[in-house]
Length: 395
Image 1 (cartoon, one colour):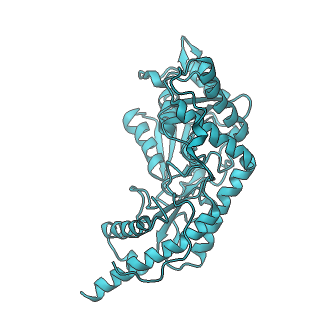
Image 2: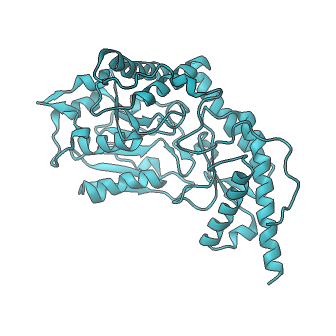
């Protein structure tokens, strides 16, 4: 492939811009895991204390209300969401907000797996939110705070009724630690370690309000629950789960890594510092988009633009004139150039999203690296665009 322009002179210090697993914290080395309690039972005193420490530090960092419970659960954020859906839904009608691939999967669970009859899916295409005024808060409401595959987020929690009868179940995996969560509006909140904190995979976090706990204690689903979903026994809440007595065996290596991430988050100013780092990354991309004519945000409303999963669409006429498969091929060519040069890894849009780019802007990303990386994106784009122009000219 012929190169269309001179390569930029600078390279980012960290080229990892994947949306999950995400970049490790600045300065991270494997020495951070030196204290991991390997080969120990997670039921033993010291390992259980480490698990409880993850819970306690997470609660404090997020400013979670004292009467909310928090647990470490299996299978990352997906496991935490599934636990909530299968344990809590069915007591009343359900509204699901579907505006990207993961929220679409929760809609599939509600309609096709749980097969709930009194269920509505409020949909919106990539780049937009559903009409939030249409949500029925007599129903339980399932939604993502931030659409990881669309770059669209709810702007705040003002649309959620204070006097709601149903529960709000919020998948916040790419929002927790990056965006202000309105806890009093949320009854169930889920996330994972591998997003904004840059932790390792396979462990989820599940926060429950008193209203959600009451539902667990007073409602029994019509379907059987697998062991990894069970938070009650004999009509009582399994309180140990919320003190680090996990349902199944966790990785103590991942636990040590999560603690390192949480300590780092505290060291950069806590939640305020994390927000500022994420916002700075979005500003860096927004400044570049504003002066780059061939690209724009996928999120149409600036108030709904994600500062973590920053999704972009190519607006150039030559690209718009391609079919979907050809657009996907062109994006892959751009991404391959960037990976070949070692300047940006894993920034193609999600496979279910419109062909485009997705740059992770979570707190472990340095805004300086974003600014240095973006001219390389322009260089790769210009190279691929020139190749397509030459191909058409030869036809």
